Image (cartoon, rainbow, N blue to C red; front, side, top):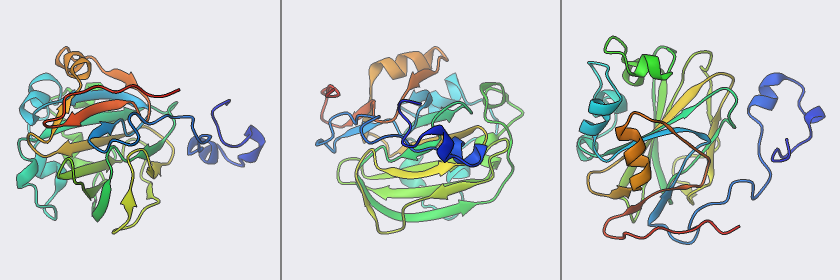
Length: 236
């Protein structure tokens, strides 16, 4: 509660508490002045893959998973087909607002209707489930100077049919800016980067190659744009 913007008696319902805001500065943003450094979009358990092929080899086992299936028919997906994939899985106990991993301009929102299957690892790892391509989701295309276009996909899950955005088409966002929130339940965000636009941090790739999720918070460094290859430190 020390991180939460309002005291407990401010919340009239559990769902109000569930979508709680944090105090300014509670989540420092790595290299805030460097737009060629991408950051974590959520407090979550993270899986990151330099290529879509890696994601299906190590983690996503659904037989029907594809980038085209994830992004739907209304998004031009060719540039993302062999891109990099980052999965942010939010559990019910997590802070449930999600933030932009990059700086840029919101080009468009695309809503895709669907189911509300669980997004826990058992489902994602099952060849019989295709939760990322069958669940209800909203795709946000962010146009950036450093990473090209980035597809930000907010996916509903068990008990989460409500995905709320606080930004609009045409808005300029800085990395770390809030984009929206999920109401009660568990949920997932997936960021898809164009091929060869980002070098994801090695520790995240190494854990993911071992099928280990990494616990991260909003603003932690995710990776850097090619050809930049430097780590940075979050200022206290």
